Length: 225
Image (cartoon, rainbow, N blue to C red; front, top):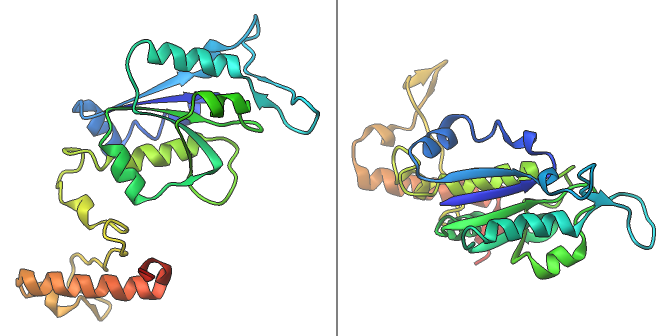
């Protein structure tokens, strides 16, 4: 899978993909993350990428020409399944969306900045608008990093144990159950005896029941269906 990220401040995205699981996945050639500096497509001698709003108002707006030129340049080299704009008023990013996007071949993530992008970008270039939550960030870069991590770990071969992602929270519309590791006892606090039984069926049943309990206590909205 290939993910191209268009950013006005690309330095913000250097670190998240150079460590741990994301780094190893790229080294294995399982997926690529390519970061594009929008300033490279800026207008004029000063490589301008933003301008004042028509009609007045506070805040600058990202210009259409640099974004259009960058997207068109990328599309001239390959086809893309989605061109995604990161924006607070987009569709809420969740696990089902991460699952769907992880099965695509190539996507573009356009990071908003300043007061957002010229509306014509959204009307004529963007195929999907996504938000990671009901709050506002300084730009879409952190949201892009979140999406890439959530999507990338679902690609076969990225995790050491490919079944691990199947038991993450939200995969079956339940929160994940409690987990424990050694020592069996610490400060008088013991792990549940069932986890030492070696009975896979009973352990699975216990984990499912614990997932339901945790979801009921912390996210009852997930159990409405």
